[in-house]
Image (cartoon, rainbow, N blue to C red; front, side, top):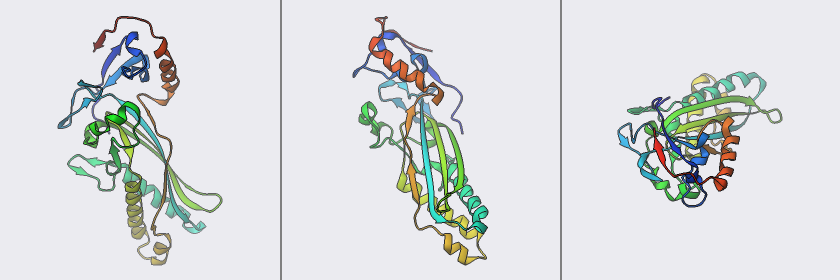
Length: 248
């Protein structure tokens, strides 16, 4: 999905890179160039940078690793079919739907904006994000999934690497994603084993184990992460250049 190819850039000279409460976060961006939404108007709403209400939102990348464990040990004869059911479940959950026709079991239903997990400056402005609309502020989603059978207990599970490019502050709602996962999995299971009620009963989920791995909020691809760390270190030793900001 995409909210448009245009990105606004803000160059910040060295003096603006200082640490402390006046830090504008430019060190997180390659070349200290803050990337922003193309405009304050996204979709049918206005969105402003809480750090600077006169400017559009900042472009952010958030990465999550999610483990979906059905807690069901699968026999050899049913492995292929059960892996297909889990793969289809995740493909349904991947699809957000459309602004006027959202997928009730899709990704937009278990993403939350703002929230308690935020830290630092963003924590004090979390409420600025809570009314965000998924299709307005999420520019792109990359969902990479792998379905597996555990070697020790033969449990059916899957890993999802999930990346958002967005103009907000994203959290994953674990209770909600668990609810959607169980509901969607069971619906597909019943369809596939319609004429085999014993198997459907055997693999029906009452709960699942879902683990959310470390979230990295950054503003660019992971390959640039070392650059961002170096730039953070440069904040304290920045030169005394004129603090002129340029918008292009």
